[in-house]
Image 1: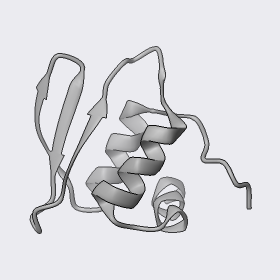
Image 2 (image 1 turned 30 degrees about the horizontal axis):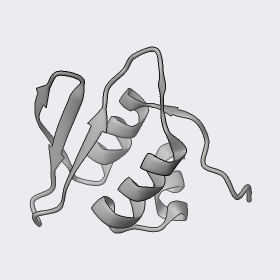
Image 3 (image 1 turned 120 degrees about the vertical axis):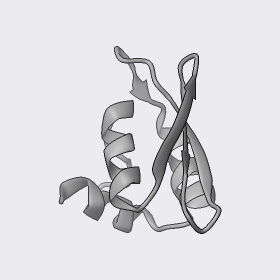
Length: 78
């Protein structure tokens, strides 16, 4: 498996969040806010012509979602 995460647009990250049980709560400017029933939250920058930075995506996966990269990638491919 590659060490790097793929380049993803915000809409693809949002789809994975919804598969993981996160619910879109609101958008302020270009930031989409998601919340999980267990209290976890995250914010995704929504710039339609740009990808979510890999560093930010790693932070979201590890700290906000509290899952492994593999689990995130599995949800991406489902």
